[in-house]
Length: 124
Image (cartoon, one colour):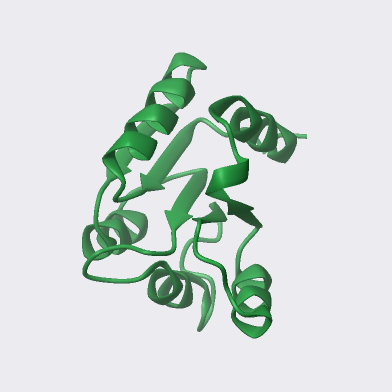
């Protein structure tokens, strides 16, 4: 699967802009959305190869978005979803998210370079 289009749902302006710039510089088409409601709407109406989804968002949490997209049938079957969080999840919540997502990353551990490596690993 070739990844060309990325939806980045991230409310932290610094992180969102940093990831967006790095990904755009590598040739990806990136749409940055800063709140959960807009992110869910964009995920359902747009066409994206990859959705990078923050957990802690205003208006609608990432867990709600993940449930809406993958909970009752896969509403975005052609998209991979990677959860990004700095929020320490209890093990049960973490396992539930991982079962619906294609990846689960702790933002504090992910540099833009590492994020690019992870995205490229999906393209194999």
